[in-house]
Image (cartoon, rainbow, N blue to C red; front, top):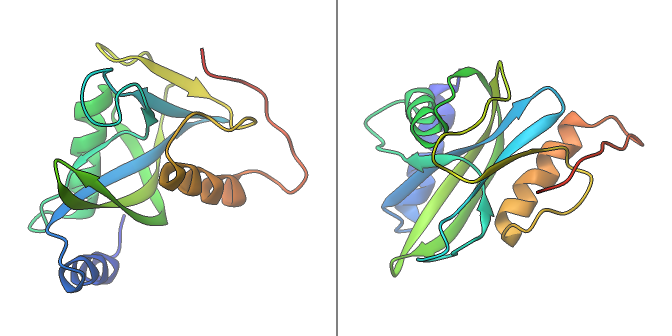
Length: 155
């Protein structure tokens, strides 16, 4: 569960920076794999691999928003929301959007309906944006034992 003081801090920082559009996302893990979703070819960042997530209304809790966003984007139900990995800003439709990223564990690495996806072990650098790569690097730093190497790749 995400601490209420962290949520207040994150929202206040976005407000201070003049960013009104917020997104929650997760490095969705199951065992040694994480889930990446591929954006549709048309539109901004077309074809790019990304982390599951969705809009965040500050009136709701981050936990509720993450559970809803992950479930809506993937059809999977989060079993646990844990570590806050950080935030990044991107432009979408001409306005700044702040992404808050957490570790989200699911019980089963199931197929994701109606969306190109991949359950990957993070041995290679997946074709993601630099900000998403930073979140994956932070995830690796807390999840992979020093000196270990996992295997796997994108389709």
